[in-house]
Image (tube, rainbow, N blue to C red; front, side, top):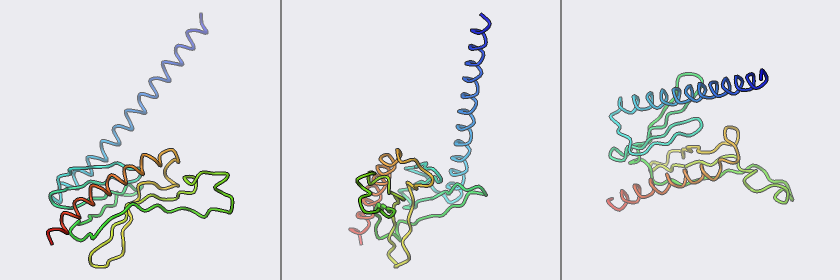
Length: 169
């Protein structure tokens, strides 16, 4: 009887700790989105699309044709704006690490993937800008399909906006 009581108490304590951790994660996530939203409001942005990635939040204001990138760092968050009027095009770029001879016999190609990024090409010839969706050092290999789809979704969405603009010109 005492053993059953101890087991029940341990289970209840574990459930409470998991619940508290979940609440803490939700609270931190809400605080980050609040900071992101406040920053967007400061610049008059109204986001039509948002994405939370491992180390960043990105938001698109389709009407103003701007993307806000909010980098989550240990120090105060860093951020930058991408003006789509300055963008010539964008494409998903995958960077792979070196593959030894016969390496693909032992490991799938995804095991060598280092980065999946959305790369922006600018009209004025400025250096390209890579917005990472997957980084091997920050993400698990199991996240590759989901993050690849997210990057491709943004590529399609932004591609339509950029094509529409180039037809007007």
